[in-house]
Length: 291
Image (cartoon, rainbow, N blue to C red; front, top):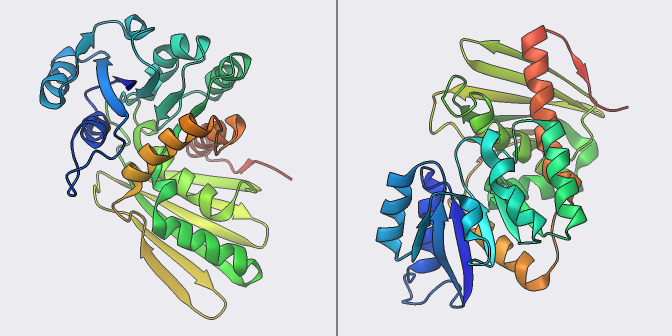
């Protein structure tokens, strides 16, 4: 049996992943019969213990590093991204396949350090926002690939919790950025952001068009995309309801094929973009990203 450890039981994703791997689906089958979540750790012992009891996890550890040697892969689901590096560090040092939830980190310099650690130890790594796997997002990406010259612009709306206790804006910021990068690519020329009462608006300038990102503060269900083409507008919700499932599938695929779908650098690029958004709305300046 392949053993998975979770770090961060306070996050709903930890509960979801434990359910996905440890409970039978509607067909009466395990999604991945040879994989189980067997251990959990993190800062919130009460929540960790509750998940262990609900889903049959064998062990609850105070120190995540104590899971070393007792699990075969780790999923860091802790809500506050400022702890992601310290949580995953001991596992990357041992080459343990790792999933790190959004945001990968809350500091780009630290994200680069994390990637170097993974590279140096040949550790497989994936994670970030699973909304990049949404069928609706991938549909938009296909439309853009096939009609790039006809793209006039776009709008992406997602929630944010600007002043939340889990590193504020960082907590939900990855969703919008990773959706944007999945659809339109990394070729952002510049960006400008403003923050009005916690609602953050961002203009991402690409070659030939701009994408408007709207972070709606405390608006839990605001997930919407509009693509403006020369001859029509296409409107879709961001989430198709299955992206967390696909995130699990991608994690297992990476482990079994021993190959990462995204490069290390692509995984942390959203952290760079989020830093630039914060810099822009904090200074009131337009930020040049690339030439």
